[in-house]
Length: 403
Image 1 (cartoon, one colour):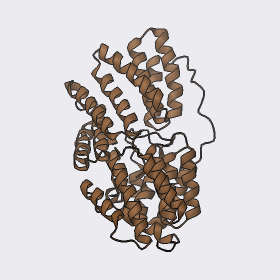
Image 2 (cartoon, helix red, strand yellow; image 1 turned 180 degrees about the horizontal axis):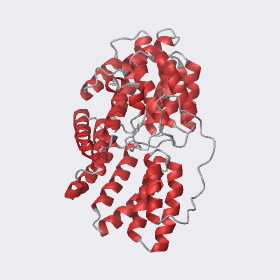
Image 3 (cartoon, rainbow, N blue to C red; image 1 turned 180 degrees about the vertical axis):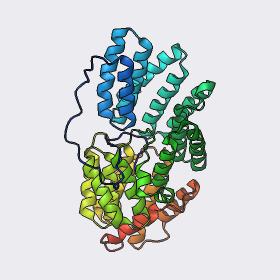
Image 4 (cartoon, rainbow, N blue to C red; image 1 turned 135 degrees about the horizontal axis):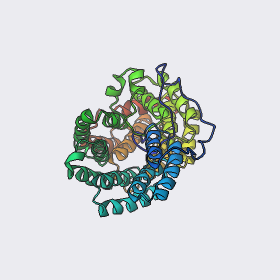
């Protein structure tokens, strides 16, 4: 349920074939200083920035962007400068600096419209839609991503571009979160068709993370550990996020004991990863490690880059691991995180957690269950595996006497 793929993320390296946790290490050293390569052109620096970004090394990408901007300015190449600043908007989004990402993308969008640059327009619509999605506004995100799709479709040469794959994937995930699950999954499937021509795996990655988010992890788990860790998709996701997603998928399918070491390794490798710590909180709760669940949840709340969905997930972990007043308060905080309730999947899962807690307290067939069943039924998610994970978590909690 945590937010990932693509979203603000910690830096990470490509995995090795020796297992999901084999390459995970906490990164203590700072990123390198701004590159100083006398022979490098503005274009080559721009390419290095793009490579670093798609590898998930966003802090390194930022350094190359700074050098590339300077080189383009010195060369008087305004088009190149706009391109690299557009990439900077993506980097700022991945770093969780939504305000700067929004401002940069708006300025580059205007410049792209002035130059009739359809690719630039589409990519900046993607940045703006991404900011909306992870700010808790999936309807606005779907509309923005649809504008990106329209920009790419208006240029025949871009209809099979990676940008189109990204726009369709983002639009699909936004529609799922807005409550239009069937429509969203159809759009992601369309993006996967485009990916067959782009040779990227972005759309497949979004599909897998969305499956975990809604509690249908079977497709991800059908992959071997090595196959799953081999998916990069150009999504600037860290290795740790891949490990966390697999840990959640395992925990959703009653394999929480196998999931816990993965979740711990991912959180340790990514101290500023909201998704990773939220995943650990849920997996620990499913294992009955209540203290660890609360610690991981507290860490999420202190991470600047945590999204609303990371924070909501963390609060649900506390809610299902404590049936007393602390859990009650956590459930209230989880409801507060989704605000007006645009994220219909989150609304339904918070209601499900409340119903499972009521069930554990001996209250069955009440208003909580009716509301949860209604919301999940409307989404077509009555079979979500989150129900199983929540029930195992509350099964470890000491229930107070029913009132």
